[in-house]
Image (cartoon, protein in one colour):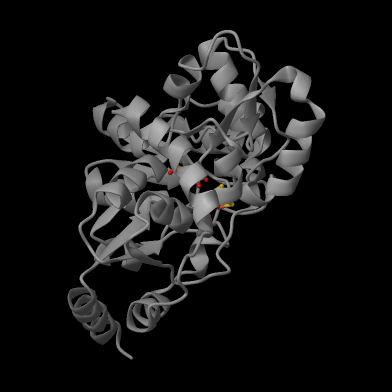
Length: 310
Ligand code: 13P
Ligand code: SF4
C-alpha cells in the first residue's frame, strides 16, 4: 500500500478508536510524523497519565507500553510489535532483583529504578527515574538509607558524579549506547572540530568524558537550541536526529559514530513500522496486560517519580 494511503488509514483508525499515538524520540521519521506526541520517557509518561483517549498506541519498546498501562489502567494500551524489548530492561529480571534484595536484606535498600525496566522491577522499586530527572530523584532519596540503582550502571555512575550520593549499581547496560567508544567519538571530534558533542548518560564514562553535554534525549533539544554552536555530534540512537532536525532546523546534526557504524540504531525501537501501527489500531492487539497486584505496586513508584518531577 502507498505510504499516503497507510497514513490516511492510521488517522481514520485513530479517530474511530478514539486513540492517541505516543512515540519515543528513537522511532523512525514516519512514525514520529504521525504521532500526537513525540518525546522522552518522562514526557511520554506524563502524556500517558493525562490522556483522555480510550486507546493508547505506544510506539516505543515494551517497557514504555507497560508504563503507560501502569499509569492508565482503564485505557487499552497497544504496541506495534510485542517483541520490541530492551536489552537494558532484560539485564535486570524481576526474579534476580528480588533474590538480590532478599540476600542483602541487611542493607535495607532504597531501590531507585531507571524507567527502562519491567513492571515487575518497578513493583519492587521505591521510586522510578528517567534520564531527564535522575539527579532530582536521587537527590531526594532518604539520607539514612543505602541506595540500590537499577538497571543501568552507566547512568547510575553519571548520577553519582552529579549528586555525590553513593549508590550500589546494578551491572546492566544498553547495548546501543555502549557501542559508542572513546575512539569513535575522538574520530568524530576530529572530523567536526567546531561541533559540540552531546551524549546520552547511558554511554560509558570514556564517552561521557569526551562530551560537551550529557543529558536525556529531550534535554538535547533545549541544549542545541540555546547553544551558540552551529553543529552537534549526537551520541545516542539515530531516531533522535529526526526530532532535532525538525525542531532546530537552523542547525546541523551529525549522528555519533560507533566502533562499527556511522550511527547507532536500536533494533528494538526499529521493529515498529507504520504497517504494524495500523494493524495494532485495527486489531487492538498486541495489547499490554499486567497483573493488577504488580501494576498497582508499580504505579506507586512511578507516581512518586511524577510527583517529584512536577
Ligand atoms: P530517554 O528517557 O532519554 O528518552 O531515553 C530512553 C532510552 O531508551 C534511552 O536508551
Ligand atoms: Fe533499551 Fe537501549 Fe534500545 Fe533504549 S536504546 S530501548 S535502552 S536497548
